Each structure stands twice: as C-alpha cells, then as structure tokens.
Length: 219
Length: 219
DNA sequence: ATTAATTTTTAGTCTAGACTAAAAATTAAT
DNA sequence: ATTAATTTTTAGTCTAGACTAAAAATTAAT
Ligand SMILES: [Mn+2]
Ligand SMILES: [Mn+2]
Ligand SMILES: [Mn+2]
Ligand SMILES: [Mn+2]
Image 1 (cartoon, each protein chain N blue to C red):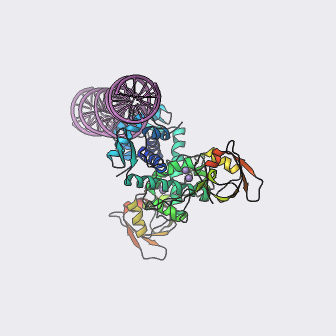
Image 2: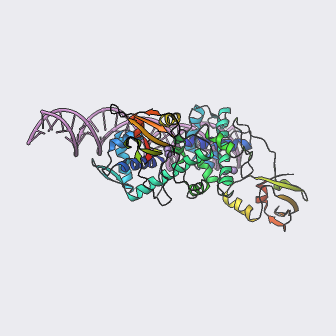
Image 3: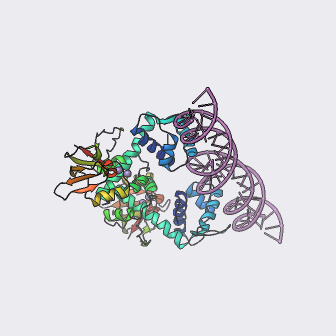
C-alpha cells in the first residue's frame, strides 16, 4: 500500500510520541507537533486506523501498529541517512540539515536508500547522534543519559542531542560542544540546576539546566 | 513566489514542448505528456497565466514567459544534477535514474543544489548527454545531429539520446552503444532506412531508423 | 454525585488539482 | 461559403487534507 506525504508525516510524529510512553497518544499532542487543528488530526487518525497503521479508539487515543511502526522507521531511516549525506558529503553543518532531510525522507525508491547507505559506508548514527534504523527496522536502544542527570565530578562523553532545532545546535557549536567531546561536571548550582562543565583542555563553560537536559551522554 | 509540485511538472513539460518549436503550444499536447485530460490542462494554464509564468490566449495556445522558463530550467538543472549523482556516486545505470530524478528535482533548497553541483565537480552534461543548465539558467545549444541524418560512410561520436525511456536505453546498452562511442555508418537501407553501424573495433550492428532518430551525434 | 472545564469528535466548508459531459470556438472538408 | 470534424473551454463534480463552529464525551473540581 502506498503512503501520502501527509500520512508519512503523521506516522513519524505518532512514532515519536509513542517512543516516550506506553500510554496512548492524545489527539491534541499530535495536533501540536503537526501544526494542525485537533479536528484535522481526528480525520487523519480515522484514515490511518482504516489502513491498519494505528489502533484508534474514539476519545481514547492512538498507538502505532507493528506495520505503522515499520513505515515510521523507514522514514526515520531515510531522514537520518540523508542527514549523514548532507553533512559528510556536501559539507553542511549539523544545524543546517534537518529541514532538507524533512523533504528528502519522502523520496520513494526501494533501491535508492540502500545504495545511499552503502555509499555512506553504513553509518550507525546521524550527525546528531541519533541511531539509524536498519533496513529491517531494527533500532538499537543506546541508553544514553541526559547531561542533567550526571553526578557532580563525573566525566562523560557527548553522544547526541535530544532536540535538533537550529538555534540549539548553533549554541552547542558556539560552546564547542560537539559529538565525542569529553565532559567533566565541575559544579551543579542547586538554585537553578545550571551546570559548570570542563571540556577536555579548555576553560570551563556554564550551561543552563534546559541545555543540559537536551544533551545526551555516555558515562 | 512558491511553486507546487503540479505547477512544476506543467512548467517542465511546457518548456520541453516550446523547445521544439516557435509556435504556441496546444492544450492537447500538454495533456498527453502530463497524462491529464485537456479540461484539467486548461484549468492549470489559467492559473499559470495568472502567476505570470506563461502567456496564454484562450484557444490560441500557450508559451512560457522568461520567468516561467527560468523556473523550468531550474527544475531541469536539478533533475540532471541528481541523475549525475545517481550514476556517478551511487552506481546506478543510465536507464534506472529518470524516475528517481523526477522526485528529487522537486526538493527545494537554495544551497543544496549548488553544493551538489560542486560535489559532482560541476558536470556539464547528465548521463544521457543532456546539458545541465547553469545556476543563471544558461543552457548551451550543443547542435548535435540525429544519427539518422548522418551520411553514408561518415564517422561520428555518440553524444546523447533524444529519449530517456528505460527500454530504449537498455537496448542501446545491449548493442554496446554508450556515450562517446565512435560510429561509422556502413549502410543505409533505402527500404526502411535502417542503418548498419561499425562501433570501434567491434562487429557491425543493425539498428532501425526509429533507433537512429533518437541517437544524438557529433560529426 | 453533580457541575464545570477540557478534550475530542462531528458537521459543514474550503482549496488544489483532478475528472466527465456539454458548450463554444477553431480548423478542415465539401 | 457552409457544414462537419476537431479542439478547447466551461460548468459541475469528486477527493485529500486542511479549516471553524458546535456537539459530545471525558476528566477535574466542587
Ligand atoms: Mn533531523
Ligand atoms: Mn538527526
Ligand atoms: Mn531524466
Ligand atoms: Mn537525463
């Protein structure tokens, strides 16, 4: 069965919302992320349920079926592989690629994405540290911590970000925070939970709790 | 101003039809190439005229304006650059890339296509020998001949094809006819205008007039 | 347990881009 | 010059995917 652009965007967003919780997903939360009104979402949920990609009970929320999950994962796979291409091959910065990948992820071709995968040497993560699902829809659970959860004086490695908005990524770049950086937590202010960090050989930097929450690390 | 997928496809097809002739283009000829009904084409022509991309007189046919031409050329530029990418970088054959490029040509990004151009080393022609328009919409007139016009005993070089259907390209591949091949016209049968050809060091081959008409050469 | 607030759905509408059937204009044939 | 054939346009309809306003269901508050 074939998927429209609108359907693919809904499935991707429902996937993201399902990831966080085992509760059913609300109409409003989807409306917020798709930038549609709740009434439009209800319409689409009925169509998606009809096609067997979500289970949906009126007023009770929605979840992806196994098939729906696989469609979502294949779009995420395409999105992330294209992001790798844009950064590795075309020389984009990590804060510039998301919007373009939002378009490229909808290109439909059995062979294209696997050839791209091979051309890129089968990367396991994208430029933001997010894992790339396999062709079969396997996605490793990386088990990273948020930097905000790391204890005082512990050292950790920056593995990814929990948000890919351009302004956030640009801030990290300015602070010299990039994938692979070694970070030591020097100080955690109890007042606002802001954090003082040492990066390798550099002068310590300060970041807010909000920033720390969106940085993923391995201890 | 922004262009929809449907509009882009119409502009591209009108461009192709305008290329061949200085007459205005008929509604029916567009309908044939877009696989739409004439009534739908009339609808769209009115919209395109409204936007200033074509000049259109009821019942009198249509032509692209300068702006319309530039939009069409930018889509053709994208199409052909992506075709080069697919063949040169991902290892596709020349008969496999057209459909995928039909999708990729609609990706919208100021920077993407120029970075791609640079990544590919600023190619001048696509895998079918078609010239790639510059960023400014310049497209060289290559002045190739159809192989069917070449005189007996003349030698020429295969520079491109006038048709990019997969079956046609596969036939050429089977006959060992690829870009750059040196061809000598050994025989032209007056009965059906079929042609006998010598390719470099190989045994002579026979091709129909229909095939010869769609091969572009430089003498 | 009722009532109030919130969330979700339904009903009705709109737009882009397609369609068919019929009308109008153009072109070809006598 | 008329008439016939062909092409093109108009009028009316449909679908996907959005919207608003109002109704219905659920959840929270008394
Ligand atoms: Mn992204
Ligand atoms: Mn990413
Ligand atoms: Mn092509
Ligand atoms: Mn081509």
